Image (cartoon, rainbow, N blue to C red; front, top):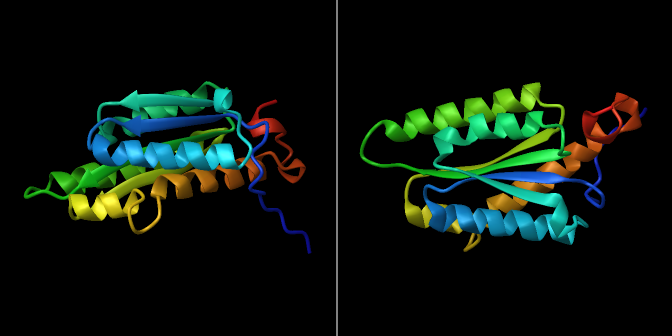
Length: 163
């Protein structure tokens, strides 16, 4: 039996972090967690590019363009949608998630989802590093592992799926 899985060693890999500005109190913490995790796993700071978009709804469009450049081994989407008194929450959450998933299917690089969908700001802050870990850090770990699977010789794709 052959098991193909990615390691968590990220030395030599390039990452794009696509971050929503809306709910920046939360998204900046997700970004900090992702950057810290990438650096702790061997990524040179110069191999991390941060792209910003207005809101979580806009994440997939920018993520798609970034992933299509072929410059990255992985791209991480970071955002936060917080429930309000209207159905807006459901629409933005669903479309952002579907959009990131579509990019992941099409991209030649690894794509991970670090988008919080929370009932209130307190819950979002907990998931951005206060009590429940940092979901940005978790998304970065997933990106490292997936990028290494994509680089596997068994998949015949070489570095980041680009040859």
